[in-house]
Amino acid sequence: MAWTLAGIVRDHARAGGARPMLTYGARTITWAEMDARSSRVAQGLLAAGLAAQDRVALVDKNGPEYFEILFGGGKANVVNVAVNWRLTPAEMAYIVNDAAAKILFVGPDFLGHLDRMEGTLKTVQTIVVLGAHPRHEAYAAWVGRHAPEDPRRPTAPGDVAMQLYTSGTTGLPKGAMLTNANLGTGWALVGMGYGCHSILFREFVPQEILAALQRHRITNALFVPAMLQFLTQVPGAADGDYGALRAIVYGASPITNEVLVRSMAAFRCPFIQVYGLTETTGAITQLAAEDHAVEGPRARLLRSAGKPFPWVEFRIVEPGTERDCAPGAVGELLTRSVQNFLGYWGKPEETARTLSADGWLRTGDAGYVDAEGYLFLTDRVKDMIITGGENVYPAEVENVLSDHAAVADVAVIGVPDERWGETVKAIVVRTPGADPRPAELVAFARERLAHFKCPTSVDFAETLPRNPSGKLLKRELREPYWRGRERRIN
Image: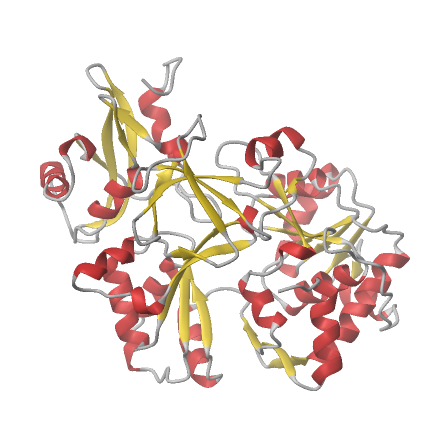
């Protein structure tokens, strides 16, 4: 695929401007309307003096305004920086400052955040609020002041279109620069690129999603595993009419067999798993629907991330040496494709550590490719536990323990051990009403894994710490056990 942000809305408005492009609640927006609104935004960005490749930031939940600003930025060749609305005001301010954003758009739910971070903003020249504010212009008035004329500022495939900030589990967030040429994936943009009618929700409410699947006759949907779990727990969810569904795509975190089987039974449509990173502009692998056997020898594939798309290259290399691993051996996954990002904004050294001169991107994920070409991810490289000289990848242990009926959530970490250097510890959130003994969970793991991989101790917790993207904060979990030690591995 070859498109630009501006080209998506221009082309579909010209080919069929009266067709619906986006539905948000009771409001439906046509392609022609989005084309005109985004042109007004583009004119506003130019009137504010923004040069090509300047940054604009947005703090808000889902809404049509995001796409007006996104496509308007594309027409003005301005980079969109969407700030995760779950962050604290200080974290938001860090991203806005790091991006050197010149205009900041703020949604109505975050005016309190704006008040707390406004005094710390360093580069913002204009603040526009999606609502009313005593000191700043309202978005509706700002857009209305500008003509719906596409400025058609020149845009190249290698120009940055979006700057998405990574989760920052090991340090401050980094801005991943995604170019027009990268934009071959990403759920909303893929659908819009093909001219699909998209149904948008401000946030995830399971009952509303289930109703919309039926009312709008949704054909394709993407959910993370936690969403599927919540959807299928709604009373009567499995009784709905989902006959229009062609496929449900899921990814972003591991899924338990129980949740997957329950979801497949409820929605009665093909399921497709995908895997990718911010730095790869989304999905780079796919586990096809025909590989979703829940019984028999092919059921093992449910633990895989599928196969790479035809245009995506893979290598599995030894961490530290980058020598290619033998088939089936665990190493770090490297990938190369047109989807690989340009680099981290303002961080050339970080970019060089992640992206080689010949285009190979270090994913930081450990895994192996089997004889059939399926990718199996075992863990993040940095979370690997070395116990008695053996490598243990926590995700493998977590997957096994998550199959125990008494385990609602689990994290596996390495803790100091005088004999083995490190040993495996599981931290478990119990299923409501369950009271498993640690020995019971250890025995459960030992029935399914080599003993060196199994926990030697189990702690219980009410919740596990996660970042705004839902990833476990393993560093926080390890800290109490390694406190006072100069080395954090043995």
